[in-house]
Amino acid sequence: MNKLIQKLAEKEVITKDEVIILESEVKASGDREEEVIIRKKIFPEKPLFHLKSDITGIPFRDVGIEEVSLKALEFIAEESARHYKMIPLKITGNVLEIGMVYPEDLKAQEVLNFLSRQNNFSYEISLITASNFNEIIKQYRTLKKEFSHALKSLEGELEGENKEEALAENINERSLSPDAPVIKMVAVILKYAVDGNASDIHIEPFRDKSRVRFRIDGILHSSIFLPSKIHTAIIARIKILSNMKIDEVRIPQDGRFSTIVYDKEIDFRVSTFPTSLGEKVVMRVLVSGEGIHLLKDLGLEGRNLEIVEEATRRRYGLILATGPTGSGKTTTLYSLLNILNEEGVNIVTLEDPIEYFIKGINHSQVRPDIGYNFSDGLRHILRQDPDIIMVGEARDEETTTLIIHAALTGHIVFSTLHTNNAVGVIPRLIDMGIPPFLLPASLSLAMGQRLVGLLCPFCKKKIKISKEISDIFNTEIAKLPEKIKKDIDMSFPGVYEAVGCKKCNNRGYKGRLGLFEVLSMTDQLSRIIMIEPTEDRILKEANRQEMVTIKQDGIMKILRGLTTVQEVFRVNEEN
Image 1 (cartoon, rainbow, N blue to C red):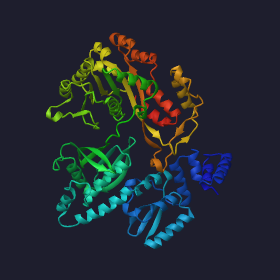
Image 2: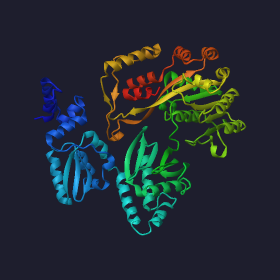
Image 3: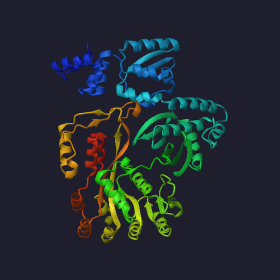
Image 4: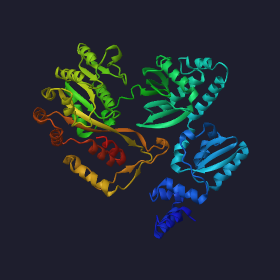
């Protein structure tokens, strides 16, 4: 008997006819009733498991990964945990608390009874949701085991009388390979970040623990919690690698270091930040050469790609990449620089910080603390006989004025600007104090962009979209140029949703993709700038140019099965 389905019927969530349909689907598919109910979106997962708790009498728990004991994980092998959907949460004395999605599974109960006899522990069961289980199971990763071993070694050393000497021995080696536990722990963090394609590592202090998080595909994931007493040692080790002052904990510091991980040369850009509970560290992971992509791999295609390639062939003029922090602007500019990087060309960059080193390009790091800022650096660059210049950001009127004049004097200049879209670039430059008459001759194009998750090709699932979404698609597609519209199937058969599998670490996405819009300088736009440079007038000119907006670019990529409706709508809310 399907007790949950019957319970939903009692609550009048479903009708008698729907009960018959659901029960027949459970029988035909062989799936559990919970899986069918959730898959068909009849009832939310968490309230459904609360109902199940009422039926079974097993207490429901919503478990945070910080509650999971590393020691408890050793009692049940990962393969068994995954197969039976059960996971050890914590060990108190000889009592093991176990979270189970299907505690009614008789085979799982037999396995538990066997393991308890073999390992001399008793157990208590809590009910957890399938989603909660999928999040907790990540705790089995090798990172946890390596940390557990290193942690035991370190705690053993710290139990001695000379704790300060033990810590000093652990952090003062400069190689990543010694056996000192803290050095091992830092090395594991770095290896795991590279292995998981993380872009950033966050190590944060709390009152009773230290949290390590990795940013993967733009989203931060909590991966491990460590005892707070070793936080200072780990931070000190990272400071040594980055040539920072170990004893300076009152002010932020910046540094970087390089090492070999999995036969790859990796740069780590390090920033420390003092908080009320200790220093926080963020490390940007920079894999040499991997920040440089072909333009089509970034997501630039069609009209957008044609206009950008034409602008780079002119060998003069300003190209601005716009968008919020983390939208991939610098990555796009590096890819353009890489295309133009030839033997007979002098390319100089002025950055804060330098993201990637490209062979053949002269990278310069600004140092405001010693008076070397963007405006001073740009003046000196112009004396270096450059052909192409990249300035990390047009931050202020003085720097932006120098960028404009460099573009007017026969240089290709690349830079970034913080605006919501390409149409907002010209009003923003004028607000910064740039005379309008300078813009037509200096600005080649403005390029707005966002980053969305790239669907995992192994688990993405085709879906039928709602009428509401279909209406939005129709409205946006109607504005597209005819040559683009004619190739779109208006039945929208190629729409997918993210699912999650082993190959994408259950995220549903594998990598990221850019959405773009490109506004180029034309005679019509020049006249608008000189007469009435409002966003409305500029938008009309963009429409005349048949500019594909970020939202329209996103919809076309949804229809090609590259990303999801949720991702495209999420980034468009930033406008």
